[in-house]
Image 1 (cartoon, rainbow, N blue to C red):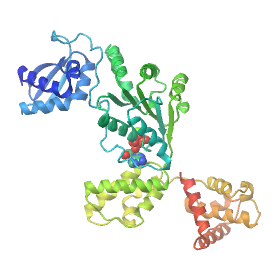
Image 2: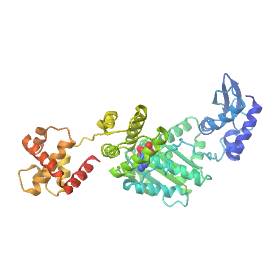
Image 3: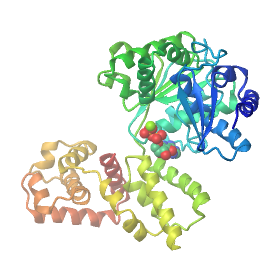
Image 4: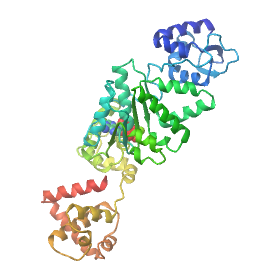
Length: 446
Ligand code: ADP
Ligand code: MG
C-alpha cells in the first residue's frame, strides 16, 4: 500500500461518509505505509485516532483489502512529528459525529419489532416510541429505569435504530456511562477536553446507558451535567437509563438528580407471567430461524415463564440452551429435558421466599391479622387462609414440616401436614381457591 493508493481510498471514503466527516476524520490521517501486514496511519491526536478506529475502521479496512491483499490489519498511531501541513492543528470546530450511529455498537436484534410489549413495560415502550419519532422534543430527558435485564438497553438501541432509518440526518450518539467516563478521563489526560466537549455538544441526540455508574465520580459527573445542560439548552433530546429512579441513585448530586426529573421518568416494572410467555414465544420464533424449527411440548413455555421470573436475559438464555440442545440431539423439547438441561438455572432462579413473607402476604390478601394467622383461632375465615399459608410454605420454601410448624405459633408438624393436604384436596374442585393461590404465588415470586 503506497501513498497514492491511500489517496484513492480517501476519495472513495469522501463520497461515502460525506464532506464534513471526511474533512474531520479522514483527511487528517497520514498513511505511513505497510510493514509486515500492518498498515499504519498517523492521527493528529489520540482523540481523532480513537474515533477513526472506532467509527471507520471497518470501512477503511474493506477498501484497503480490495486494493491490497497483503494488509492484515490497520494501526493508528498518534504523534505530530511529521504532521501533514494540511492537518488541522486543533480538532475541527464541530467534529460532525458520523452518520453511522457510533459510540457503542448497536445490537441488531434490539429493535422495536423484537420488543414484546406488556403491562409492565408499556409506558416505557410508548415513551421510547415517541422519542424515536424524532419530532419535537417534548420531554427532556427521557429517563428509563428498572432492574437488570428488563429491556432498558434494548429500548435505547431500538430508538437509535428507528432514528437511523427515519432521520438519517440526525446525529445520534449512544454510549454507556462508563464509556462516557472513560472518554472523559482520556480526554483530560490527553488535553483534548475541547474536542470532547465539542463532540458531545454537537450531537442531536445523546443516549447514556446505566448512568448510575457515574454517581460519585465527581469530575465525570460534573462534565456530564454540563453536557446535559448544553444539549437541553439547544433543545436536543437526551435519553438516560439507570437501574433506579434518579432520586434513589446514591452519590448522584442533587442538582443532577433534579434535572433528570424534569423530563419524563418511566420505569420498567418486573415482568409478569403473560409478558414472559409472550417473550418466550417471540424469542422461540427468532431462534427457530437460526437453529431450525424444533418441536416444543405443551407446557414448556408455561413452565419456564412460571419459574424464571426475574431477568429476561436469563429467560432468553434458557430458551437458547434448549434450542441448542434439542437440535444437537435431534429431540423435541420436553419438560423432562427442561429439568435436565436447565437444572442450574432453575435452581438459582428459585427465589427464596420465607415463611414469614408468605404469612404476611396471605394475611394481607384475606384481610386477616397476622397475629390471628399465628394464633389459636379456628373459625373458618382464619383457619382457611392459615392453611393456604401452610401449603404455600411447603411448596415455596425448603423448610421441613416441623420447621414450618414452629413458625406457625409452635404447631405440630402433623397439623401442618393436615393443612397442606386439605388445600391440595380443595384445589381439585375449587377454582376460586386456585386463582387465589396462583395470584399469591406470583406476588411472592416477583
Ligand atoms: P437492561 O438493559 O434493562 O438490563 P436489556 O435491554 O439488556 O436489559 O435486556 C436483556 C435481554 O432481555 C435482552 O436480550 C433483551 O432483548 C431482552 N428483553 C428484555 N425485555 C424484552 C422485551 N420486552 N421483549 C423482548 N426482549 C426483551
Ligand atoms: Mg442495560
